[in-house]
Length: 321
Image: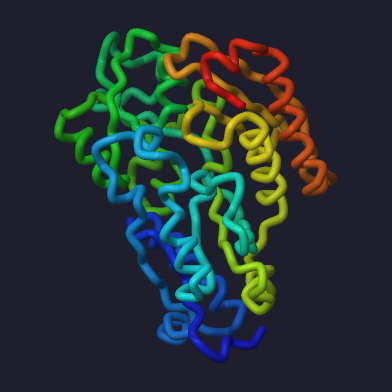
């Protein structure tokens, strides 16, 4: 593949993890063109932006307006032509992209499991001391924790990886949660601890996956992104995002889903924010034979199964339309 004739900027958030992800995409695009070092920076410069979600640190995303707060400024940079590519953590991407944009590549997924990080070294929900304070800004993690441990006190905790770990070390909270994928990418020593099993905490939809968006009308950019595509991950997150779309698709509802590449089990769940009720369903998907269309249909099917099981209770408690 030939190098681009002019710079093709890559938009990203400015957090350390987001910049790591953008550098990874930059390196892969450069390798596909036979470039490295300064030539990679010149061909695919990184445009760091501060998202609305990054600016808000005093309340949860639910209170601030929802999932799209992490992508709004980046989307606008692409649509205006300021950026050619945009790198996203797929768990932060709304199920519907703005008109004119498409997910041109999905990279191979990192370990999607959550990790419990506690001052006492506990790695399992059951081992936490009774009544301790746990910090998280994730409505999903809050609900899953309270479902397993209703005695725990949950308080909001926002910020990047370093910020949250700092608040843990300072004693502001007894424990918090972080995605293992982010810890591994940042080469944090905490990544070597034991992650939570899926049975304890099912991950967020598309957790651990990186997506690269492009403009639909930019055929050159879309062609370059084909070298980055990991088909099994694309199939998995297509199913998970279809499940999310079938139920809600925002931050208003504690929703989790994961398609396990090894067991081929596709599990989705919805909880009440207080964790009192949980609806969970599973089916099996063979990643080797499933098409994207079938993956989407499976996600819709799993979402409908939970709707049927929960009935009016889902409508009343979660406000799912």
